[in-house]
Length: 82
Figure 1: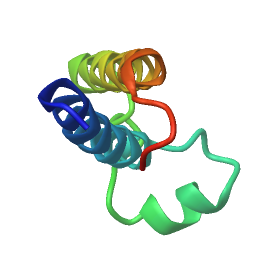
Figure 2: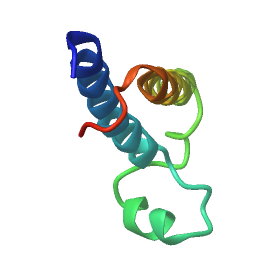
Figure 3: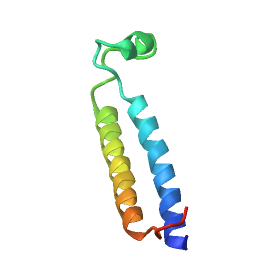
Figure 4: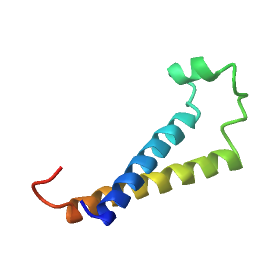
């Protein structure tokens, strides 16, 4: 495993963890378990505005980085080694 694959593996791990954390930070739509848990933490207006838009953008960016690192890793990882 070369330095490129090691860097991609680290990037894939960090972007995967960041994507999961960012998805969990999203507010619920008010019909599920997330609304029951987070109802005491957030006001009804917390889901709109600049914070939610930036959270959406960060989530999409980290998910794209995760997907691209997997695609590049599939093309560059040596066969027969783990």
